[in-house]
Length: 194
Image (tube, rainbow, N blue to C red; front, top):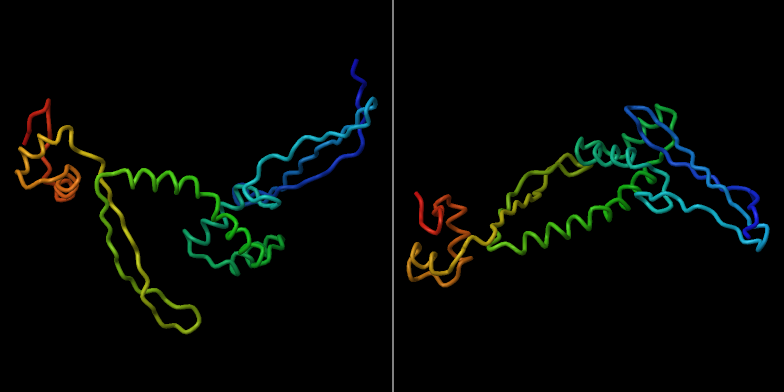
């Protein structure tokens, strides 16, 4: 027969979130229970967090990241905005959160990479743009890369040889290029439709 457990104190943990322009601190209380029979102490685990051992809730972290990368708001200015609201968040703390959050989308980036590399062809565009260098008011050259990929288009290698000529050696060589040019034929029931 199990003995009743008695409370042996608790540990408190707080998570901060941003809700519609106001700060909310969520306090999570996890009581520690001790078994009277065996003196073992147990406690519920903490809920999952975006940053291990970090205080920001997902809403606050998303707001900092969107303000930095989407709105181009530097971290020192975000720190000043938080200070006006009575929240002391130093720029170094915000920089630490931003740095640690870079690991969060890695599983998604890996899945996208596998999908893209599984295509028949990959095309890349390198576009130089002017970027203002901080501090001196001058610009430097930065780059934006755009990628386009195609899925395997051929149902049968014979269809492609008949359509694109005998010089075609593989389905990915011609199918991807013609799809990009917009000249790839459409197939309906195995026959070419124009």
